[in-house]
Length: 232
Ligand code: DC
Image (cartoon, rainbow, N blue to C red; front, top):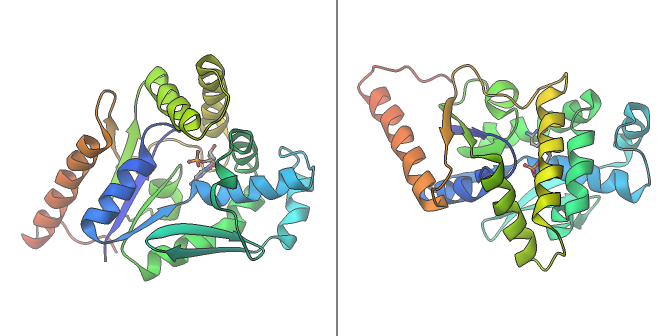
């Protein structure tokens, strides 16, 4: 079993890189942002203020989230419905960021994340994987890139999906969400002390993936030689 944690801000390329790693290593990719997006989606549907701890906490009892893997893709089911790309809409990003600062929401999603990682070898991406969810992960990467490059990547993704958005708005919203995620009291989106910080500005997903695989192989070799002890 291996656990690879990839944290970092949005647009750093976490999901692209993690998906490639999962494919090449034959392990499970877990997109934890999708879980916060699912809660955000429900809160928006109910017309509740995503910053209201009371309002959001009161809804959690109505939410059943199931993660399933279908044809190698992670699918998140909300009360029996596969939400697919609905959670990827730009409006949901802000909801996800706001609800993710609420301790009851993080506690609500904790077991789902831990249980997937206890049953499978995983590459898991998010904001608190190396710090909270998998503190003993074999490899911890904090992936980042310049604000401009991250905004451009996110913009291209949205445009490709047919969204009508402006790059300057995406950059502004992204900076606001990053500040929100980094500055929150619970599980702030900051690197774990033992994470490797990797700025992949200018690199393709394939190139970033190769670099991370080198790090993974290095850890695995050191384990074999007995230089490093398995952490879990
Ligand atoms: O990775 P993403 O953009 O899909 O994540 C959506 C939001 O969820 C993001 O603003 C921060 C939050 N999040 C989190 O707090 N912890 C995680 N492990 C993953 C995401």
